[in-house]
Image (cartoon, rainbow, N blue to C red; front, side):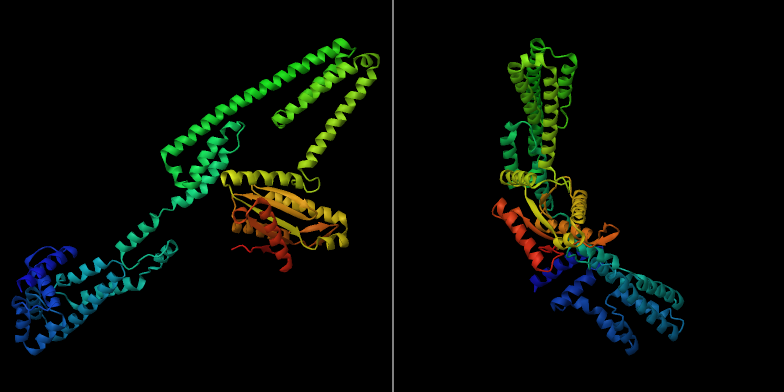
Length: 515
């Protein structure tokens, strides 16, 4: 029995602390008796109030039990309230109003979604003023009723998008929200950012940095969250700094090489002048040819090769044609014209080899070169990409109905639409006939399907006008992701199979369908 009493005492003190009650004799006595009653232990001191109530008049005893009088203070407050009654009718109204008021208060507190506040409110019922009139109680009751009626907790539904949150208790609600916000979402972000960082570091003139880049790429691929570590950030900074220095040195060496070639060309020009009767005007023409080289747009290898060719040509011509040039200046003019024509032809051939003349997108040859580049980046750095095949539906019918001029207009317009809506990082070209191919680096299968469906809708709603007549054009698209394919050739094959599936399924659709 002593052990049980000690347990009741211990649990009573814990409950007083949990309910944030003052450790007063009255509070302790009330909580002690509640715990003892719950445990089925009869304590004589806890039965005093019940004995006093049983000795009262039957009506008063029933009233006291109805309002749950359980302490001496509550019993005294009950007696004071009965002695202060002006008349029986008003007392009944006051009791009814008080009871309804208590219900409203409890209902309002439960709407606050705080169980601790609810418990404190229940524990504070005995603190209500014992002397009230009916009118004041009615006013307070109506105010609480208005509060309950107007209270709107629909704002809590905004939390649903974050996950499962307990809305019945503010403390648990905050705990759930904090738990959701503290999830390791950074790792997902790092998985996306890491390949982008590697991709930004990839372009480099100095090829000697490739091994260092491969090391960083391997670390980030296996542990993307390493981006947040100061050590990795410092390593990337040092890599960039080193690459800049090596790139500067590489550019310096390349410029030095070009300078040497230019000096050699300059020497050969003077040798030609000495060995022939070339006029100053012709020398100026050769200089002009050299100045026409665009150092800002042409790549180093292109410039290097062109200068070497010029130097070789000058050397060969100076040995075999010096006497003939001296006898006939017209030969020089013809050679000069021939060189210009050859340069123009080479320029046109260069443009045609990279850019489709009709659609102004990349040629199939340029597409194959880009596919090889992105495949190497995937193998070496795991930079994923998605292939998108786009084919015009019933294009033969368009050519047969409106003519090839209308067909060319549609192909040209489609090329313009693709160039407008692809990202700067994407690569789009004409794969053949009415078929186009887009290479989308860093894009997964569903994102590629969404891109293709966006292009499909744009083309479906686009007004293709030929000779004041609108031609309705629709396309079918097939999508494949490199990560889901065994090789670069297979991703092309898979995209082509999806295109064929879209055609078989009724055309004017994307396969697989975007989610």
